[in-house]
Length: 249
Ligand code: PGA
Image (cartoon, rainbow, N blue to C red; front, top):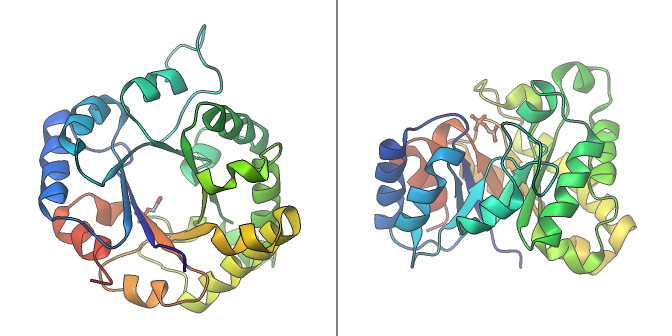
């Protein structure tokens, strides 16, 4: 049985004070059956890390630099994240791919660097509306998956979560139907079987992301291959994130 994994991606929202307030509310909600992670903006990581001490909520970052240190103005290194007790990092989010031009190659380098430093990774994959409508959803997602995982040894696979996030469903209020999402999740799991083997594919957590809300989480999570959610908008308020965190309580 795979343990469900619910992650909140706060994106470019929340001052330090607001972040501490939300993290405190989540902490006070008590423990969940599910694995829970929140990814505040970089500026709030330190303060939120203090709030989360002694809880089961995992601290995540939303991105990371391609190198450990040096001349990379404006970037944040894996060593700095480790220094703030960050456990996991979201890589390849569609906003990084589409707004900031991150390629599969860049994302792959970041993934291997994160793993070297024992950070867990959520690798995001997903097709645009145009790609879906032209029947390319499966091939786009498969390519992002295969390129993203280049050089990742099977021993490191337990540190990787895949998040399937159809770009057309992110922040738009349009959710993939549970069945449509599950179909792509199955494609992902099959590819993991080909790349690593059946045991590894059975164990890997594949999250769905894209307009997940308290009202649709239960139906999405009921699908055979959907093992959790990566939540954006609804992660910004305790009143919407707590019911998602505890959808199966
Ligand atoms: P959303 O974002 O829940 O606001 O659609 C999801 C994401 O980008 O991870």
